[in-house]
Amino acid sequence: MSIIKKIKQQIKDNIILIYMKGTPESPSCGFSAQAVRALSVCGEKFAYVDVLENVEIRNKLPEYANWPTFPQLWVDGELIGGCSIILEMLENGQLKELISKTVKKYKI
Image (tube, rainbow, N blue to C red; front, top):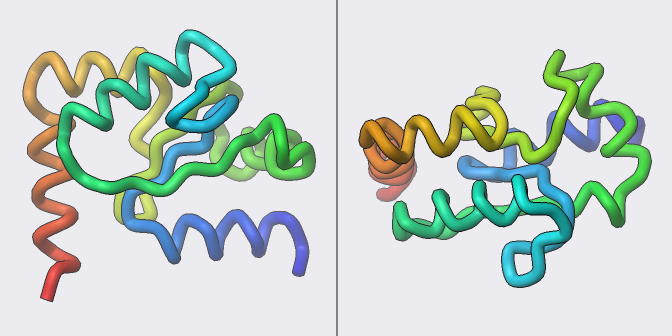
């Protein structure tokens, strides 16, 4: 499977997905740590990919997403953005609303 196909599959398989440096339990950069804290406030499970452990994804995802930095939050197949956008959305209530709405959409 090509790396782009793998990225597309990860995004399709995980309704809330963050590409980050490190893991949610042990982020390897401040931006990833802030983004994970913001997501955690929303109270829903999310998937992650550690781009430090996946060099091919780290190299290809910015090109695929047309977004140069990490973390990258994807919700329901769409790129939401990076750390500053995530924090802004948390502050104004949009992040929790988006996450809740998306989770409800997929719960049966």
